[in-house]
Structure formats: C-alpha cells, structure tokens
Image 1: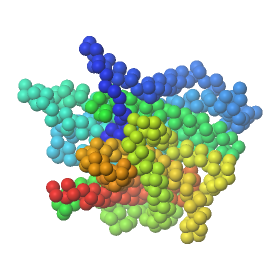
Image 2: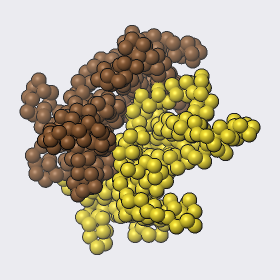
Image 3: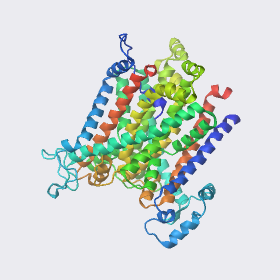
Length: 300
Length: 314
C-alpha cells in the first residue's frame, strides 16, 4: 500500500469544463460522480453503515438464539442464508457481524491517523534529528509485516475485538507517518509557505493552518483504502481466534467455524466471505474514486 | 558503490535495532507478573524461577534488553517453554516449508501479474485493460483465507482432485508435495499478482510514452519486439524491486494460508505459539521475519543500484 499502487490504479477520464461558479467542494463531488465504480463503492459503504446501525431492527432473528431443531439447515425461506452448527440464523449473524467489521475498520484507522499524522507532520516539518528518529521508528514498524505485528500484539495483549483494533491501528500507523511526512516535504517547498513564513507566522501556525489543510485529501484517500485493509485484518485475526470472541458474531470467526463443516454445510463458509469481499471492495472503490476526485493531478 | 552501501547500512542497522526493541518490549504488554505469564498455562514454580533467571527479570528493563539482544545476536532466540526446544531450532525446522510456499507463490504472482500488467498497459483504455483492472481489484479485495476455503470446497470437497490438507515433504514425494502446496501457493500468490499487475501497468505506461520507444516504432521494429525487448526490459527494474517489498505481504499471508491448509511452516508455528502462550517462539518468529525483511530490502536497494547505470554514476 504505497503511493505507487495508488497511482497505478488511476484511470483516464476526459477533463470537463466546469462552470465558473462551482466551488472547490462541488467540483470534487462532480468529478467523483463521473466514475460509476466510485458511486457504487459509496452506495455500498452507505448501505453497510446503515445495516450495521440498524442491525437490531432489520435482523430477522436474534443472532445468539440457538435452535437445536434447525442445526446446519441449508438456505430456505425461513432462514434465507441457512443456519450454523448450533442452529443460529446466519443472516442475522452476518448483519450483526457488520458491526464488528466496520467498528474495527473505522476505529483502527482513526487510531492510526491520530497517531501517524502528528508524527508525520512533525518529522516533515522539523527535519533533522527529530525526522531521523521518527523515520527509523517507522521503518522498524514497517519491517514487521502488518498482520504478523498485529498477531504478535494481539497475542501479548490477549485476544479480544478491542485489542485487535488496537493492534491493527498500531500496525497501520507507520503508513500515515510516511504519507504525511512525504506530503509535508512536498508542500513545504511551495511558495505560499515561504510567503507565510516571510510575514512572520510561527512554525506551529504554518504547520497547522497552511500545511495540514493541504495534506488532508491524501490522508483521506489513504484512510479509506486502509479501512479496506483493516477490515481484512480484523477478519483475519478473528479467523485465527485473536479478534472478536465467540459467541459474538464476526465474519472472520464465522469462517473459522465454517471451515470445519465444509463438506456438510458449505453455505456457512460462503456468506461471511462474500460479506468481507463486498465490504472490502466497496472501500477500495470509494478510495480509488476519492483519489481521482480529490487529486486531479494524479490522473492521466 | 561503497558510499552507497554505507549509507544504506547506516539506515538498516538502526532500523533493525529499533525493531528488536519493539519486539522485546512486547513482553511488557503481558498482564500481571511477566515470569508467571511467560511460563504458560502450567504455572510450574520451577519453570517460573527458570524464566526469571533466564530473562534476568530482576534486572532493570534496559539491562534486560541488552542481555536479550546479545543472546539474539549469538543465535539464542530463547527457549520454547511448551515444546522444550530452542526457538532457533524450531524456526530452522519450519522455515524451508514457508520458503517453498513463498517461492511458489511469487512465481505464480509473476506468471499472472506481469503479462496482465503488460497487456493492460498496451491496451490502455480498451476492454482488455478494464478486464485486467477488474481482476486486479478482485485479487486485492478477496480475503485470501476465504479464497483458500472456497478452493478447498471446490477442488477438494466437490471435485476431489487435491488434498485439503496434509503436507508431504518433497524428499518423500515431490508430486504429493506439489499437490499439497499448489492451492496454498495460488491463494498466497493471488493478492501479490494483483499488486504486480498494477505496478507493471504503471511502469509499462511510463516506458511506452518514452522517446526511444517511439524511435524504435518509427524504425519499424515489430510491435511485439518493442513491447518485450524495449519496454518490458526497462519496466522490469521496479517490478523486481517490488518483489522484495512484497515479501512482508507474503509472510503475513503465509500465516493465514498455512493455517487453512495445515501447512506446517513458519506461520503455523507462530499461530500455534500464540495459542500455547509460547511467547518466546512468537518473539523469535517476529524477529526472524523483521530481519529477513530488512535484509531483503537492503538487497533490493543494491540490486536497483547495480542495474541502474544513472544511479551508479551519481
């Protein structure tokens, strides 16, 4: 997940002439709407949030209610997605599982941004020894692969959804340190920063008022794409038994159980996987769309 | 060359030291008394005493780190409490399995990713480009452990062609070994293939616009020869470097893939260790991973330097 990957995904779009009265935000929105895949991504993300928020209302059954008379029953009118090994309705569990996935995705990335952005700003703006120290720390964190670091953290912290979120967030922090530092370095060289300095603005005000707003778009794009990665990471940790603990529903832990019943109840493995796939794909599409809309320079 | 190497080493060495500090500090996250927690489930007082002694838990933290790091440098990654074996032996035993898996996965990623990237760059904006991009997006979005489960469902449960699990060492039967490894390798290579495709496409697009390609075309060089000889050769440099960078992704993926297909490698060792509360083994695996990653990156930098004459002259 680096700038190269991000740039490579950009698709060519024909430039369009804007009406002069269109504000910058409106312009971004119009550019966003030009990409059907981005709109689809946004729609799915909104739907996902709605499903998670309204889980209690729309789920057809209690996700914890076992039914020993309907153990591992295939999809039917009564149970559209079928039931699991103790007769719980899979559709209800998938709907409630969206909460764990979204919570993990959003919380961990929020944590990564909150930690990474100030560090990156500081490194890029201060330079020198501060920069060196922060970058070595970031390199060291990047040297430990994302999931391996998350597993190790989850192992030492103890398995729970909260700890999984902390682990994923800490593992993703280095991405944002690097990105915001690189952005700061690029913007620092621009003339308006020099102008701001020349009129006597203190460094902290230049960093917060002049540099920060300019790096927000890049951070936003990366955050959206990182949510996708974080959702996979949460599912992976839960799959390994290091995330959401049973009986609470999570797509990853549902897959973990399902793999033991593949020959008798394949539907148990299909729905959680499809859900993860759709959630991840939506955030990836949204992220790609945001990048094209927010940063026209990256388009070819 | 020497100056370049020295500068790279000046970055790599502190990085490794800080990584080792982070890995060492993981111990501090354990709730309660460290020695009791490290001793695992049994809480045997003898074991606890041994651990207190072994990790110098009565000494201050920085001293403990130095003593631990000294041991690591001499190849002492600690002792697996659970398996009663030195961690280094465990790692050495499992590493070849994961290396085989990783190499097969990388090969699959190259075979799929590079031609797809070339094709989509050459046919930019056409149907083939969109299809290739779609496949790449699918490869990036599908959780690889789910892909593994679906492949088991199809090839093992439904068709019965390939074993769902059961690793056979290549020394015993190469055919059986490959049969057991092909699905995990494909699952692992799938996501890398998508990244490869995107990078190949980007690199190729850049080269395709360059002057010498236009010259070659104007001279009447066959289109395929232009693509293969003039473009791909130059685009290959960033692709090769990417291989080293994707190694981390490969190891992360291996943890899950090995778990699904019960491949007794590095990743399975780590996950089993997590559940056995075998913390020394977890630390050992992580430190080996980080070291390999840093060394591979260093090698990639050097390789990049060697193949790029512009850098050499500077």
